[in-house]
Length: 318
Image (cartoon, rainbow, N blue to C red):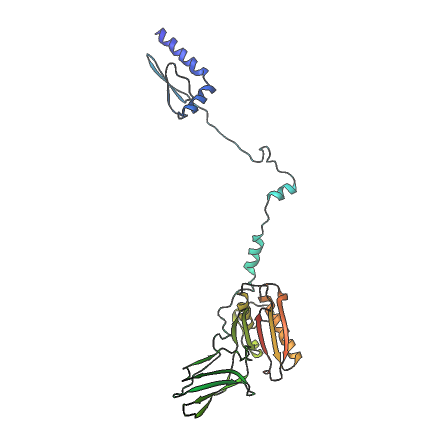
């Protein structure tokens, strides 16, 4: 029995003497730490929470480890001490979105589109349907109130069932809305007989053309006060922008280039009237157009035969 106790004491002394060297050997050998291990005679020590001594007798020991508690205070850690006001400002990012979101929640954006507005017609401003048979050649002439030709269509054989006029004159310029136009169809048969068909007069309303530089909108000045937008009238402060100008601004804001000029050309019977009309339209459109308001150009043109009140042409580009 004395021999057994003496051998056990020797093994315990050996295990206690092996500290850091035993821990390094355990990591190098790949043994799992903090697990039950068996220490045999002649074997290096290891770090363990339990110990089993095998010899003539087998004795098992459990070692209790104190709990590991980490108390980290960033304010007391070296190198993280708060400095002066500049140090605090350098670590704090400014809030750039908060004020904008708070302002936009109370203020309506002037650049919101108005898809429910449809003052400008697109496509054909007039459609002609000649109903003649046995025709060898034909000609359809569109004339203004002074009898001047503004559009001309002709061909051989029977005319098409429908001829669509997009509002462009023979020179490519848009015709003036608000005036009365008429058309005459001349039909010649194979015998050389000529027949004329005179159509009823018609007026061209506001319309929109697509050009390489962007949209071009033409309308009569009478349409500026023809209607009101109920949605804006309830919340607007001051004069209400005419809906036709809101629609014009909507089409211009959809263009990718927000820096190109916007020309507001007013045509009237006197320069004073045309200049006042162009300036008024430019002033009312400026708050609703994206980009620099300085890109809006007001141009006055004088035509003695202009419609009463004048006409307006809005286009983008040079």
